[in-house]
Length: 52
Image 1: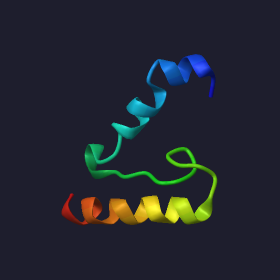
Image 2: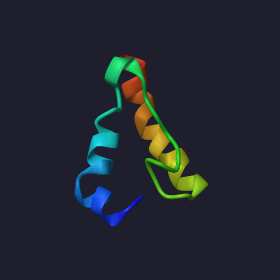
Image 3: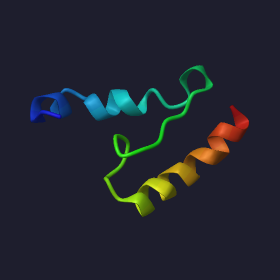
Image 4: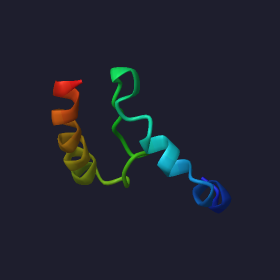
């Protein structure tokens, strides 16, 4: 990812996809390449998925 794309809001737009069409995403694109942090992030999505 280029610095320009990050400045232009790439991650903000990526995050806005969460929940759209009842679809949720998880993985290193949404968080650092650390499996424990990815799992923690995924756990925060579970309540949103359950109510979607």
